[in-house]
Amino acid sequence: MRVTFATAEFSPIASVGGLAAAAAGLVGALRRSGIDVDVLLPDYNAVADGVVDTIELDVPLWAGPATAKRVEHPVAGSIYLIDVPGIAKSHPYLQPDGNGWLDNTDRFMRFSAAVAAFIRQTSPDVVHLNDWHTAAALAMLDPLPPSVLSLHNLAHQGATGGEWLELLGPQSAHFEWWGGFNPLSGAIAVAHKVVAVSPHHATEIVSDGQGFGLEEPLRARGDALIGILNGIDTTVWDPQHGGYIEASFSATDLSGKADCRDAVVDELGLVDDDSLLAVAVTRLTDQKGIDLLLPLIELLDEIPLRLAVLGSGDRHLSDQLVAASQGSARFAFVDGYDEALSHRLIAGGDLFLMPSRFEPCGLTQMQAMRYATIPIVTPVGGLVDTVPDVDAHPRRGRGFVMADISSTALVSAVHRAVRRCSSRRLDTLRKRVMSIDWSWDAPAQQFIKIYRDISH
Ligand code: ADP
Ligand code: GLC
Image 1 (tube, rainbow, N blue to C red):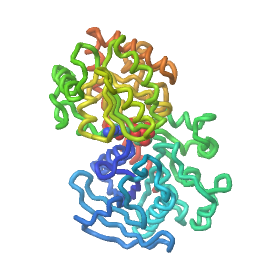
Image 2 (cartoon, rainbow, N blue to C red; image 1 turned 30 degrees about the vertical axis):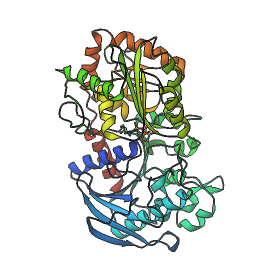
Image 3 (cartoon, rainbow, N blue to C red; image 1 turned 90 degrees about the vertical axis):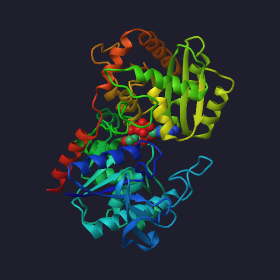
């Protein structure tokens, strides 16, 4: 079985958020199961080294010239880097000031046209597209190949002016949305299978007001819309053998976890006392509810608790976090995207804070549990599937679920967590969350079954 897998991010070549890790994790597991996967990724940096093969892509004039350059990456494996005019930038989506590049629609429409050309020229058994950056490829194909569309984040749809509809081609009628062009609504309508990144989110997005305006087209797909929970790369997020952390630990010997905490507390210059350490690693966007932490920061002395946040994104959020951290011995903020630090922080934390306003799946709560760090989450999306509350479910609970999406609910969940995690019951909980299998093996088998079903 040969699958073309198109994505705007792929770890470790181009990472902004979970899309990169999810794409790389799934592709790795598919390849281990014998699926032949051609990965198509924008060539953001115009990589010239290590190209082992080049395919000229036959795209319409407005989209070209387009080439697919195959590289053998030491970690990511075989990848086609797609070069189209304007795609190479310092960041996949954002200008240095945090606003989107003004030509993002043009860039990803050209990328999608190149994806469509690659599919026409190589005739894969199945096409797997991810999010709006690749979705328009289906507008340009006739007949439509067996296709899967993964929905990682419906907040970004790439909707734009109706002038694009004339450029698209055979399926363009499906992509018209309130007089304009919407890559995601169109691909939702025509893909053979539409996959949300968690089962609970699949039910949310067909509910009134929770589908980012796409509730109707999603509902219209009936059983063709399903949810498959993402996995994480458990060889990278490995407390026993992973290379990133101060000391290794396991469910049978947790002692190294305290060394991880001491090391990161020292690294960030936080006060050295016995209080618990809460951490967050996140994109700084409205979605993640990081503004809800601000009232908590004021209470850190009283609780008492230490808090460390690693994040990058919106300037107004990072400015607020920088201001709150100044002169504080209990709160540290690191502005940036730093994979190594994310491991040290998550492994060193006692609690992991994730007050998301919405969360299609969320990988960081799973990464946290792998490192025996107990999550505090909102009751949304994939957080519902992955974090049952320990007080509501004493035998199978894994963390603390906030009553609603507010600072008050966050503070009260933190109080609950501090009370419980200061007792011997903490180790039982840590062992429980560490023993869950979050690997991509099971989700990959679900995708393979879908690929088989739709390609027959
Ligand atoms: P989203 O995709 O919405 O950002 P996820 O939880 O699905 O959220 O995935 C985020 C991914 O990006 C995780 O792998 C996480 O470890 C990583 N990540 C997020 N922010 C940072 C950061 N500032 N530094 C390093 N890694 C980060
Ligand atoms: C998106 C979502 C996140 C999900 C990730 C990978 O960025 O915000 O919840 O885990 O994609 O699917």
